[in-house]
Length: 441
Image (cartoon, rainbow, N blue to C red):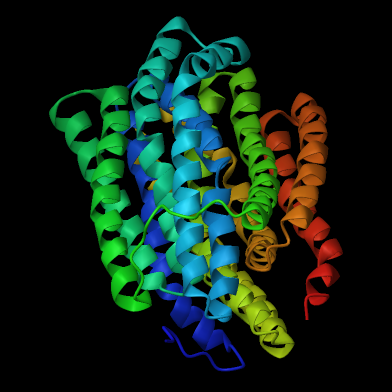
C-alpha cells in the first residue's frame, strides 16, 4: 500500500504546494501569541504584558524542550514510510505517546520549582510575580495534551499528510484564540483567562484528533493500534538517542529565547514588554518559514529511506531558495505595516515609542534566519540529531556571552544584534556538518 507517490525530483513549485497547508497551520500558532499579547497589551498596565511575557516564555521553554516528540517522530516515521514499514510507524507513534505522558507528569510535579526559579532569576514586582504564578499553575496542566499533540503532528508530517497536521494545529490555535478572547474580554479573567483558554483548547483538540488518528491508522495501514510489544531494546535505544540529542538541542534553543526575555527584564519592565511585542514578529516569520522546513523533513527522510541522493540534493537546493525568497517578502511587509501592527497590539504610548526605535531588527532578521530554519528541517529529516545538538550548543553559548557584552554597551539594540548573530551562527555550524548527511547514500 502507498499513501503517496513521489517523483525523483522536487521542484520549487512542488515544495510550495506541499508547504501551503503547513503555512496556514503555522500562521495560526503565532496568531495565538499575538492575540494573547494584544489582550494583555490593551489592559492599560504594563504588568499584565510583562507577566504574560515571562510566563509564556518559561512555559514555551519547558514545552519546546521536548520538541523531540515531534521532530524525532518525523525522522523515524518518514524513513520507515520510505521502506513501507507501517508496523514500525505505528509502534513509533505509540512509544512516543507513552514517553510524552511520562514527561508531562514530571513537569506537573516540578511546577513549584518552575515558579521558584522565575522568582529567583527575574527582577519583577510582587504583583507581576503573582500574575505569573497564576498563569503557570493553570497552564502546566495542559502539558500532557500539548506533548501528545507534538507526537501526532510528527506522525502526519512523517507520512506527508501535511493537510491533516495543519488541520490539527489550526484547530488547536483557533480554539485557543476563541477561549482566551472570551475569558479575557467577557469575563475579565486577564492572565488566568489566557492560560485557561490554552488548557481547554489543548484537551478538546487532543480528544478529536486521537480518535481521528486511530481510525486513520486502521483504514490506511490495516493495523489496529495496541500498546503491545513496544519494548524492543534496539528500537528503544535508537529512539532515546535521537530524542536525547533533540532534547538537548531544543533546550539550548528555547533557553536562548528565554535569555532574551531575561536580559530585557534587566533593562526594565518597559523593555521586557517591548521585546515581547517585537518577538511576535520574529515568531510569526519563523513559523511561516518553518512551513518549508516541516514539509522538507518528511521528504528528506523519504529520500534517505529510498537512498535517492538526487532527490535529496534537489530538495535541499530548492527549499533553501524558496525559504529565502519568502523571508524577503515577509520583511517587505513588515517594513510597510510595522507601525500599524504595533498600534493594534498595544495602546501604551511608551511601549509604542520604544518599539518604533527597534523596527530595523524586525526587518533584517527574517532573511538572515531563513537559512538556519531550513537547515534544521534537513538535519531533522535525516535524523542527524547529534550534529544539530552540537551546532546548537556552540551557537547558544557564543550568543549568551556576546549578548552580555553588547547589552552592557548598547542596551536593547545590543541584545537584538546578538539575536541576529545567533541565527547566523546556527546556519554556519549546521553547514559545517552537512557532508555527514551525504554519507547516508
